[in-house]
Image 1 (cartoon, rainbow, N blue to C red):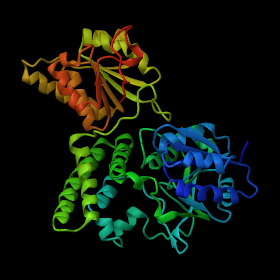
Image 2 (image 1 turned 120 degrees about the horizontal axis):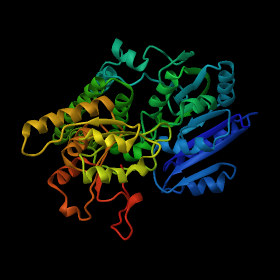
Image 3 (image 1 turned 135 degrees about the vertical axis):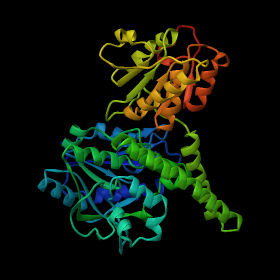
Image 4 (image 1 turned 90 degrees about the vertical axis):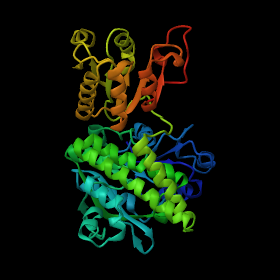
Length: 473
């Protein structure tokens, strides 16, 4: 067994990842280590350079960008070391940080995650490690209070501001630029949650480690240099990444905190995005320059996400569900043909946590021990019954906080995808009719809320029936 498995996720950082690998190989000391690079579909020749110049490095070359969490999971599934180190490609390993950090972890068997001292430049220590996301922290960040009043008590609380990163300390979150994780802890807690594309995945992971009784520790037993403060990959798509940051933070709230806190945070981000958009657009009009125009584009993209729903590409499917925990799926159908169609989807739900919603308790016989909510049916002729149904579905969404909402039609499904989208869940509308133009009015309306709605689930398509690119959630 190796002492250490080093995993580096690369995306178009050829200009720095070579220096990172050279520094790693030069500073292994006596450690038995393996280096795994996961390339997320780089177009700058990174993968070819690594294959040519670093033949002893194990390379996983993805065809597309699967995200930071998913790529790290690919590497961890191959890792054989007692410890796994997640290392950013825009870092340079200094001195004996690798040996020193492992020695510290060996001396502290209750430490599941260990971080080291990170330098922005030879003279400046970067303020790594941070607290778990919270509505107060998000308010301070979204309102600009931290930037405007960095010396205030609240700003220092939110950023560990009084701490100079010069002594050991238990922290909420160890920064992902250098994150040493005990293999034993990974086996207990699981891999990263692939529902995070980039940002906040280390907060989610550290939260789960802490919940399981492992310590997350900062120990300045060695140093690395983080070039230009980091962001070499994410700055390449900064508008999208600005939105991904907010998506990640809100996902953390939805999964781990009370629904009221999640709702408060979503409102704060939605409101602040609109205010920032108007402010920077006004600054652009008076000639403040390209920097203001760029910030206005960031805020506008965030506002569209919060108020209109995310319209970007969806990259995850039920078939490739989370590797770290079961996906919670809320499966909604009224009755009759809609329920039959939902039952045809059941093979795609195998291994996941499925909760059913329907209008007749007699359907319990079809789902065995799975949980079932029974709601009243509603028609367009009864506005009162529709209101009651909407309230009931909204309550179920708030209570269960599903990762995915799937429905096959009718009013319960329409409300489920609408409230599911607002709650941050992935949504899909599956209709049994082959021609999308023949969908019901509810189906067409639901399509505005669903990430994608199809007329057949690909894994269960009938012979010689219509074919589809893929049912993605």
